[in-house]
Image (cartoon, rainbow, N blue to C red; front, side, top):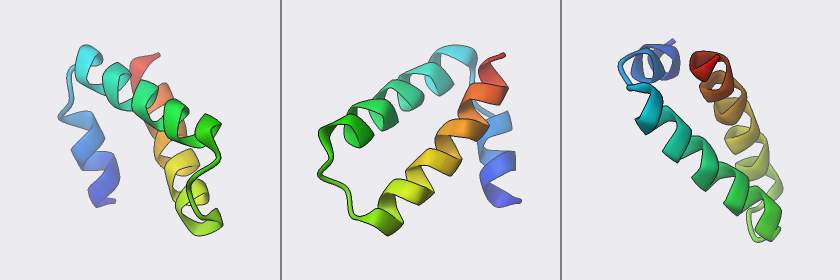
Length: 51
């Protein structure tokens, strides 16, 4: 719930910038599996916010 509230407070530009950072981290393959799952879930929330 806190993540959703946090994301709702972001502007479109802030959410997009964070989403781009998440995509970069996931594409690098350097994140551990748990971190990758957490990043993916946050990325999905950010994407929904941007739409």
